[in-house]
Image: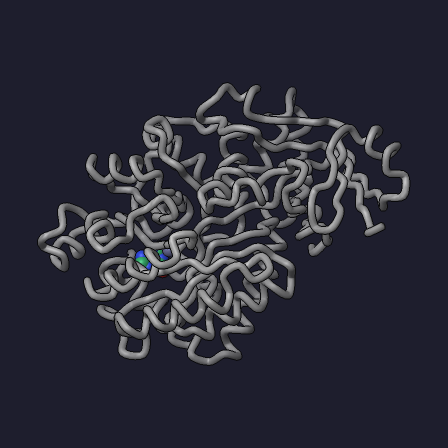
Length: 430
Ligand code: GUN
Ligand code: ZN
């Protein structure tokens, strides 16, 4: 019989979206709960006592008051920007030209790509994030580096070669044809291997010619089960630029739609300044929007309309957008989502924030039955939170009268010190 591990503590996960159904019907809380991990999956779930009786041979790890959650899922990151996170003073286009592109050019060196890929995954695991959807650089080796690093850790990951054939430095441009060929080769090499998924990745309309967008659309049509990730309507200057580059497009989304790059497996990062037609089309096709709140405040992009978009029935995930985002932590990201919510007139409930960082992002990636949940049969990616990780948090949590009041100080003030343990495919990693 294969080794079994029994985790006991306070289980929290979701059976439905708490933005859509009453909270009590969406959340499952088991105060003295147990999770049995076997063969990389969650094999059983119940009360700690029942599971301990039924599986006396399992190695037991008791987290007491610790919160046992699905591992966090970060639905939009740029792992190559790890080294330039927290760079001062620029807005999107200047930030890309000043900080991002010079750093991404360094990924022509496979040794640099390998070093940053491993550093990035170590950092994110230490922050409780077990799956990310990452942009790479134009260099195929940057995809090999993150896929190899994730594979070695047993992680589920989504990644793709970032395609750009204009409005980028000479050493960061591919062509429509080479982007197609390189992406197709990487997809064949990595997609569906172990827990790895390839995402077709045109960076955004300003850095792709219509021919390149067309080529990416053709590749997606040939592999419709793949995710396609890109950026949409992040800053007003960017939208103006897109208008000038694509004079016949109805709006920014139309630059994707006209080239076969709008679909349910599309992930559209930021999606802040949307026109009514864009909102309608994104909802009609069931595309996923990805909210990146620390990035949106850090680069000064604007305020995502979480309440309005959720009420309209959009699929939405949550992300750090490292390194435009100012943190590797989904806890810091939940705090920023709360603050952006307040600035738009809605106080997001801690259950809604936790849903976004787990099941919501997993569903945005089309992986809601695999990760982002503690359901029996799902993959055993688990993050355990300490709800009293600093004196400031502990003294506030001490006064809590219910679970959510105990959780909220950690969402607002927590960081990697709040991550007590992390399990990936049933193995403890951090
Ligand atoms: N738009 C196009 N590329 C990027 C990027 O790397 N970061 C952010 N935040 N927005 C982008
Ligand atoms: Zn981004």
